[in-house]
Image 1 (cartoon, rainbow, N blue to C red):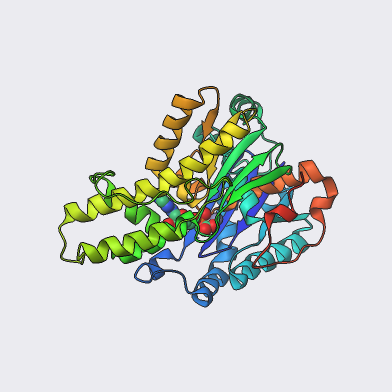
Image 2 (image 1 turned 90 degrees about the vertical axis):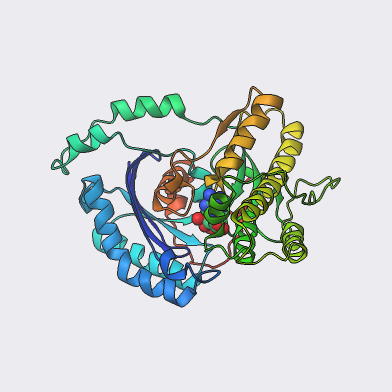
Length: 374
Ligand code: KG4
Ligand code: ZN
């Protein structure tokens, strides 16, 4: 089963070809982030304008890089929300158009369900791809890829920490489409905390990678930050207090562009550590309550953070050694990408059958709880 995925929920235009929900044959991503680097965020109309220019070329690139043509595609999966409405409409309109002229089934996918699926995907073996080039219409042999998938396939039930610029959620999942939201942020998302913190530190957007880079040689214990929701029994998150603490710390230190690099590094490292420790704190609480969880996954843009990954791995090794830890296999699968949407479309179709192909609406806000059953 080969699915063409299209994702345009924010400032990226991405198209990908994924086989059997796991093997990524191509994952083309055009980003307009550079245009927004000097600003603290994205200008929605500008992002959508770029996406109109890029969407069809992105699909062409994805097909070419995968060595296939439209006739080799079994279905199209597209992000239907949440996200920037104009951007989403560019993606869903493109997908509807292609599905109609190519006579392909169309699957509308929740963006966050895509992130939740991003730990299932891995890049196709280079050798297999080379063997295929020029043989686009011939039947492909999947045996080797399938064997690898079986070995590495995640096992339910599992906990997923989904951390991006738009949300911070903790899910208990019994299957791709059976899941329960255990906790969520009460204010800012983890990625937003990075983005806003970076902006206060005079670092470019997106803030996560900027803060992580500035923090490399810093001391994560240099400055103390509060522990949000400490003593609160619900495994929810809150980042606005950390952001406010950073603001007062910068004021007290009289921090500005002339401050020494070592100070910036220490502040960035301490702030990054505080965000990560808050995430860990809530995850520990949930792991104690759901000891049957076999795995912990971290997904979304913030899962690209290396400090977070190593702290999570250390926590599991130390306190929950039987639990397997997984993060997306490449950094491109952490941030927004069409491969995860194609993969989610595949599992949606597999679990829901033809109900997955029903007409859908494109919406800026759609709660995932309405899509996952429990
Ligand atoms: O999932 P994503 O690409 O888009 C949304 O759906 O929001 O996540 C983007 C977020 C941004 O807030 C960005 O600052 C954050 O992910 N991010 C990171 C890192 N790379 C991206 N945060 C921390 N460390 C990183 N290395
Ligand atoms: Zn996202």
